[in-house]
Length: 116
Picture 1 (cartoon, rainbow, N blue to C red):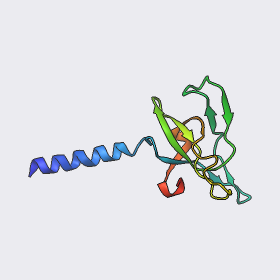
Picture 2 (tube, helix red, strand yellow):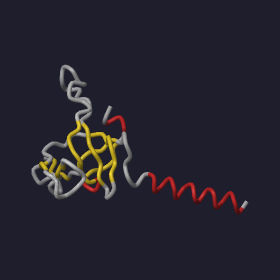
Picture 3 (cartoon, rainbow, N blue to C red):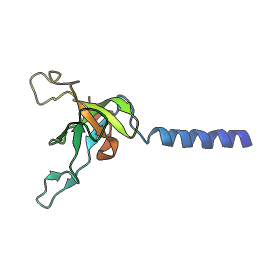
Picture 4 (spheres, rainbow, N blue to C red):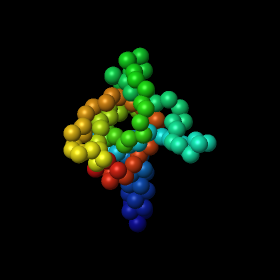
């Protein structure tokens, strides 16, 4: 009985840590808050980097679109790609385009249905 309890606790701990960092294929959206005018705002600027390094070339993220993780690097970095845009005539035209590297702390996990 003691072994069963230990295995169960270990399983729960490992499952919780597995959710801590998004892996390849995870769906993410930039963290946002509602401004005083009712529109979404970034709590702080979110940057996309050319490589997983803060010294790399960067550009400011301007849209609140969901993205998918295509690669993971040490230090909380994830490579992001666009997802299908169903408001377009050909939703898959821009899907899968790598947009850069970002820190996972600037994003929140989303349900996979938000990226499909």
